[in-house]
Length: 221
Ligand SMILES: *Cc1c(COP(=O)(O)O)cnc(C)c1O
Image (cartoon, rainbow, N blue to C red; front, top):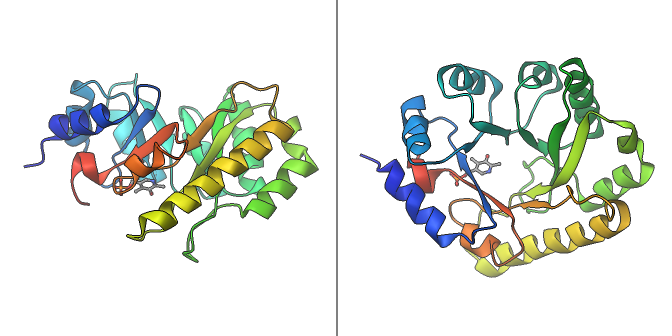
């Protein structure tokens, strides 16, 4: 049996106080989420709309749900009424769609822009140049029902700590660059979401403010 409360506590005590732990509960049953909730955890992350909807329905309503997976534009309308943060905005089109449905729900939805820095060809996200272009064009400034709160990335899934560190530091430098250029007057642009079960301790030495930890809390999927 996986001891969710103990695992959660072990992760939490390794994290600096100012780093937000997002417990990634995808593919795990709601009973396990309830155990983490009972142990004090309130922020959870899911990657599929349907699975998330079922969990939201069954679990306490003071949970903050983060969406962390690739989000199809036709699914935005289902999560817009309640999602607390969408961490995986990987295209201008998706951001526009989130803005539209947030407006219909009378909300401002917090989002992160997902960067593609890792070597893996399959990962979603803006390349640094695409992200620069997107911010420079400036259409995002008119989207008043989304608030861009920072950046998210996944490092390559490798054992080489140096490579992981280098990718995370690239993301940190990029954060500083765009913070200065586009968000200097916006204190809400402050989140650097990197670090998963195998690399969150590296992430906190590379400027992470938000780690997304799944299997180290809930066990293997
Ligand atoms: C699944 C997932 C995680 C958590 O991964 P673990 O290795 O289980 O900690 C974090 N971020 C994203 C984007 C994910 O899809």
